Amino acid sequence: MNLEGKMNFERRKILVVDDNTEFVDLARKILESNNFQVSVALDGKTAIEKALLDAPECVLLDLKLPDISGEEVLSKVKEIDKDIAIVVITGYGGEQVAVEMMRKGAIDFLSKPIDNEVLLSSIKNALEIRDAQIEDRQFLRYPGLERFFPFLAHEIRNPLHAISGALAIIQRRSDLKDEILGRSIKIIYEEVKHLNGFVQECLNFVRPPNIVRFVEVEISEIISVVMNIISHMFESEAKKIKVVTQLDPQLPKIYANYEEIKQAFLNIVRNAFEAMPQGGQLTIQTYTRSDSPQYICVTFTDTGMGIKKENLGNLFNPFFTTKPRGTGLGLALCRRIIYERHHGKIHIESEEDIGTTVKVELPVGRRIADLVGVK
Ligand code: ADP
Ligand code: MG
Image 1: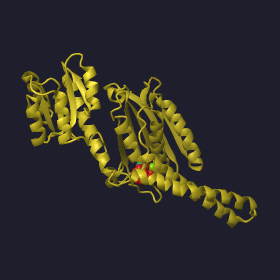
Image 2: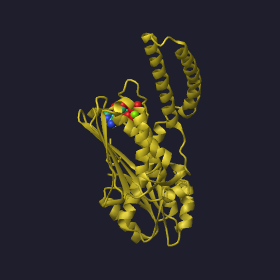
Image 3: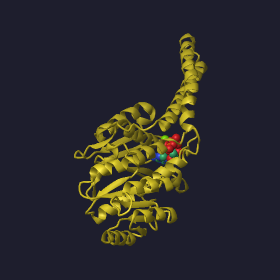
Image 4: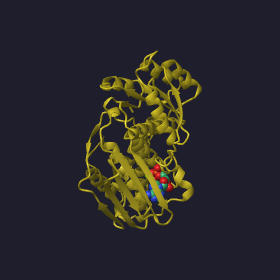
């Protein structure tokens, strides 16, 4: 599935609110030529009516209106439907107000005069965030997961510790020559390890985001840390898997949550290793594209078993797994981390029996939304 390609903006409904007819006409022209469906309100009262009647998905809102304040329109619109994405327009020097508006639920702000491309990309971005929020809520249709997993983890981990402890005693006292006993002990160890890993993955999935932990992050450093962890995780397989890295030495640092990006990369690399039980090659590449320098790209290409076409649409769904002992939470968490928490993109291409490429794009700059703690 391609979260980027999935974004089809055709016929999506935008309400433009501004009393400046010149700007309204221009915005309408740009948006309609990009296949958006546009309605217009020249004052606050009409804006609220139209928000109710036209059910727009995004509102482009000028804060200076002839009748009521833009701020009031914003909160009324949010009352009507909290999923309506709002992009605020301010005059010169209105940044302070804009930040305030973002605290109240606006997704982005633009200052006049507005460049056509900036307008379009801001609206597309706002719609993407809106969709992610709606989707996120859908996967909380498993009610109480956030509370249930930690409870479950606690209940499982305690006995696991006890089992490991007891097993160590058995091992010490057992006859080393008894092969069957030795093998049985090994099986128990492995099962305990598996259960521990399973519980950990469930916990990672529900752990709330660390909003303030955004720091400057060097991607190549994360990759080397991840590869180090993986080589311990897959000791025997690692010998059969060749890892090739092609890292851009000029790659800009990104502003990100180090632990979360590490976790996402670990999940991706782990899937790649799990897809190559007979061995193969994993190639990790980093680069920037000259046509979109605001993102860095990281690709993970394996020569593993690949993914069936019919499964491509389900990969990011929580609990979707084709592995007998998988959790199906690895990519769902990647999606949360990369797409929702870092405003990046993740995209998977695969061909059965040939291999899989996971491409991650992460924004370089520090977004104002992060500064005001809006997620
Ligand atoms: P899990 O690894 O527990 O199954 P994930 O969310 O990490 O859960 O992955 C979901 C599914 O996506 C996997 O079960 C597998 O079918 C598929 N998948 C992910 N990455 C790869 C890959 N590199 N090669 C083949 N299949 C993959
Ligand atoms: Mg996985």
